[in-house]
Length: 230
Image 1: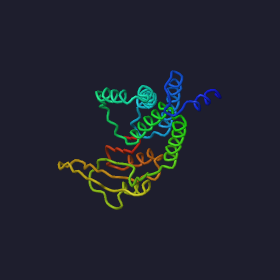
Image 2: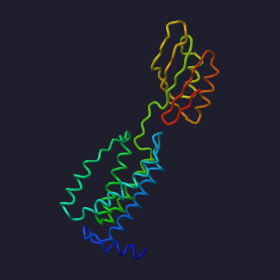
Image 3: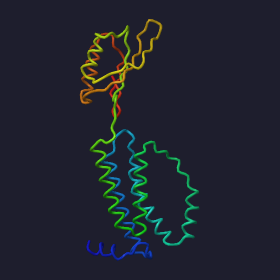
Image 4: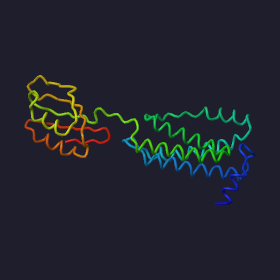
């Protein structure tokens, strides 16, 4: 370990690239890429998790470090490499802005490791990961006026003292009727509500209470991060 830190201190920023320094850059990029990938894995929420994306965070960090080693201090090589990379077309669309930010993290850390800016790569990775962990546990920016979507079919109308209204008052902080679709042939009407459920752990109890209401059919409760259908 002492020899490793000594080698990192002896390698000048932007200095000559030799097999020893290139190997150190790639190994450091691999380790830091894994740190970024583990933080993404631990703080990920939602249904769009991809194993290949997590692995790509590590590979991108190492590849960018290798690209920086290939370029070195040669401008001609840099221009040629840009032309070669321009041929590649990336058609995978990232819908989550957070996923894009992790790609940028891997790119920047790989560039720092590949250009012998080892201290910048290590400190930058630590700071970025601490920020991401803080944002995750602090739930920063969360704004959920409604966290559930309820659909069901019912014959007749729903009044202020209807059993459905009583159940919704019991489990929800607030609820809003957003649509009512009547079949027009004497069949049940389809109702859609937006809900702010106080305790998501009681979703099954909420659905059970709704099932006891006479005439209620096709109950469907959809949450932002989980789906419960009956």
